[in-house]
Length: 105
Length: 285
Image (tube, rainbow over all chains, first blue to last red; front, side):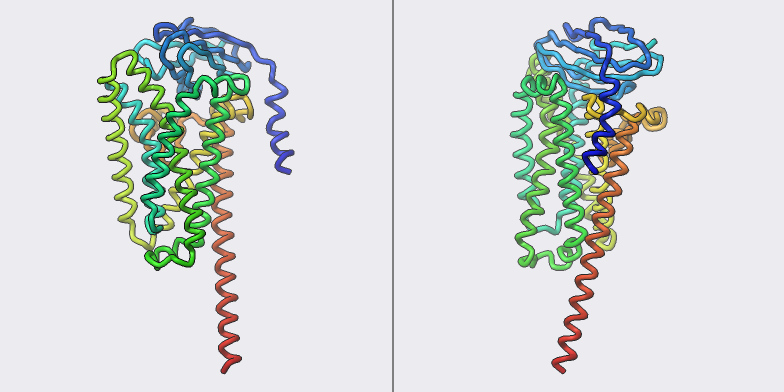
């Protein structure tokens, strides 16, 4: 019964497994590109690469996401499907400079 | 410098609130402070190890290793808190009445103690490993002094708030004490389950079921003082996904039913024991 429930819950994840992939790069505590346009209504796979020598935390209140990206390494963050609009994010460990937006169209 | 204080404060506060609630809820358990201290130390050690293994964990499971790791830690903590609450539903009253003579239950008391050690350890491990990584970054970019100073102030502020909560809780009259602490532990567990759900969505393991289900950030911002406190205490989320709310409700329902069931069973047991004693008495007469 429990297994069946998990299977049913997992079905949508499997059915929509094809997602668009986008890249963000962190360098000198800044995101590049600082403005990323993605399609609305689709699941997005974000590849975030940190080229700095210190860890960073990708955080977004509007996207409801937070993830630490180690120094000189990269991480995967799944977002969406998003409604059309602008979503702010920032690097929590260097909030003064690490700012960016994702625009869903 | 100021941002260092804020970030360390936020991370430490979640762990401090959990420790305060656990410390208050188990205050009638002999030796609870020693177990909590042991959990704290184990958690700090674990936090250092996890921080050092960041890159290894990051590359597990196609890049969603950290999410699965966090969800597993949170899930374990939820199970432990559930076990604690159900155990307390049976033994809480006895403990309060015979605070200094729980000899008969010492074996069960010990497993309850190891459960509380686990919860404290896991809370410190999770929040602590993030803090270690952050402070490492600060130390390399703005110097060790700034890291130590900001980190210390943030930590002290969190500990003070946790202590205030503890003092407030132990002043609750005994009549309401178990109800109050078990309600807090229940909501704490549900909040952690909701956070686990969030990680499973982020890892694309489970569907969000509506993201977000609502947005109350204009009402209570999660970044504000109230929002931060509510997040740490009862798992408040200004923009929760549907799955988070589902996990929250399921955990509240499951623990409540578990507590009711064990309480009920205990009453039946003690009733039938009384009846038996009565029969034995009347026979011997």
